Amino acid sequence: MSIHFTKYQGTGNDFILIDARNGIPSGMDVARLCHRHFGIGADGLMYLTAENGYDFGMVYYNSDGKISSMCGNGGRCISHFAHSLGLGNAGQLDFLAIDGPHHASVAGDMVILQMMDVFHWEVRDENTVVINTGSPHYVQFIQQDPDDLDLLHFAHTIRYGDEFAAAGINVNLVQVDGTSLRMRTYERGVENETLSCGTGVTAAVLAHYILHKSQNTTAVQTAGGNLSVSFDAVESGFVNVHLNGPVARVFNGLV
Image 1: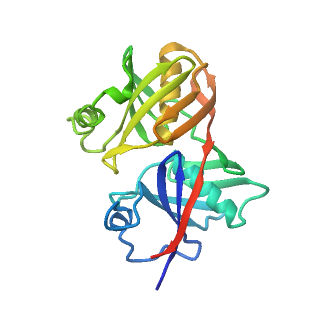
Image 2: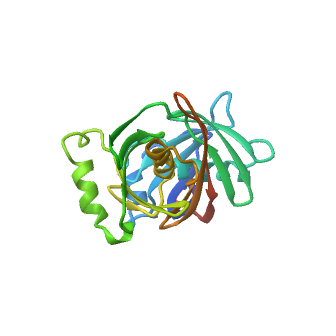
């Protein structure tokens, strides 16, 4: 049986999307489909499912074939996909992901995604924060241009170190560039650098606020494009956290 899929990307973070409202198809080899040379090629695969009380459900797999935690750019892409299927109301959508309910607003190619509230983090030193924004992130601020550093070597020392080897963690190098942030992200499950990471961008913006109590750096430059984050800082953490940026449908196909 042929299965329809749609390829999406959000600032270079790319995904295979499948409408699975009638049930998730069996026998899908997610790792093969996501493989850059022997498959479609993607950072992850998502099933759009039927979910009582919501416009849809989001089930996300990393490119290693394992079900994963929340993906911010994936959430924005699947919201645009759902809107194209006629779901939601005038571009407003509510869906359920692994980390709980989310709301998305779609207007043209721009999607604003409400992320989870964040109340827990750990400050390691004056430049480093470990924080979960739907997925766990190690955020380190640096003075150098992130492009000048060996991200893979640095990330492997963190991600495969004794503390994080079992569960894994995403690793981010971030530079403050005037009123914006420039960053690169190594993603667990992909086990490589991705062009953009929505939960990572969110983590970087919140980590900058945690360290500096400054809300003037909510624009973020990634290798795949620009995103922005808005939030309300309260005594216990962060609420009304939103990730905003463009998405694009790349192509449709059968598998």
